[in-house]
Image: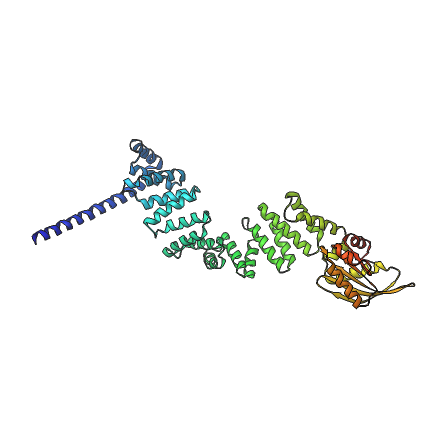
Length: 454
C-alpha cells in the first residue's frame, strides 16, 4: 500500500515538473520573440542585423540570431533574405524543438509567394496546415498559391476552410468568388462576388467578374449595365467595351454597339488581342448596317497590322468589290423591299423596248421569284425570273425545281440568277430547256449597267 502511494506521488511530481518546464519553455520562447521585436524597434534594424550576423559567424545555427534576422527581413518585406532565413530554420527544425515550425513555414511560404515561387509556397503552407489545420493565414495563402497555379478547385477548398474560421472577411469572399469564376462555376461565384461589391463597390476586378458571371447565368440586362459602367476604366474598360458591344449587337442595337466599340478604341491602353477583336466587331456592325465604307476602314487596319487574322483578307476582297458597286451592295445586303425593287430593275434591263407587267412576286428565305408578261411590237411572252443571293455553288436540284415551277406556271422561259455559281450538272440539265443560268460574273456586269435612280 505504501509502495503504491509512493509510486503515485513520484508520477504526480514528475508531471508537475514537466508542466513547469514546458510553461517555462513557452514563456522563454515568447519572451525571446518579444525581446527580438523590442530590440529591433529600439536599436534599429541595421544594428540588430550586424549583431545577429556576428553570432551566426560563430554559430551558423544560432536559433536566436536566425529568428531575429527572419523577423527583420520579414517585417521589411525583404522576401529573398526572409525566405533564405526561414528555409534554414525549417531545415534544422528536426534538431531544435524550440523552433515554431508553424510560424517558420508560414513565413517561408509567404516569402516564396511574394517571390512568385508558387509551388514552393504551397508546399510550405501545407506543412503549416498539417500542424495547425485551422490556421486562417495559411489557408488563405495556400488558396492564393493554388490560384496562381490555376488549381482552382483546390483554391476553393482552401478559401472555404478560411471562411469557416472568419466568415466576415471580405478578402476571402472575394478570393472565393474569383476562384469559382476562374473555375467557370459562374452561378456559385455570384453570391460571393455580390457580397464583396456590397462591401466595396469600387472593386473593379470583382465587378467585372460579376458582370461576366451574370451574363453567363442569363442575367444579360444587369450584366450590360455593369459593362457600360466599366467602359472608361483603364484596366477593365477594353474588355467591358467589347462585351457591351457584343450584347448590343445581339439585340440589334447597332448604334449602341458602335458607341461601345468606339469608346474602347479611345482608351489609352488596349491589349493587342482585344484591340483586334474590337475592330473586327466594329467592322461586322457596320456591315450589318450596310455601311461598307466604314467597315472597310477597320478591316484594312487589321489587315495591315496582323496578316491572316480570322477571315479579314476574304472580307476585304469581298467588300472592296461591294463598295465599288452600290447595286451589288443592295443585291447582297439590303432589306427585302430594296432587293425586290432591284430585281425589277434587272428585269426591265432585259426588255428596254418592251412593256413589262409584273404578275406575281414570291419572296422566300433563299430567293425572290418574279413572274411577268412581256409585250413588244414583234412578240409577247410570259417569263419567270428567280434571284438567289447565295454566293455558293448551286446544284441541279435547284434548277430542276425551277423548271418544274416554270411548267406549272405555263411560262415560256426563265432566268435563274445567283451571286455564286451553278454546278456542271445544273448547266447540263438546262441543255434543250428554256432556262438561262446567270452566274456572278455576268450578274455583276448587269448590276453595273443599271441606274437605280432612273
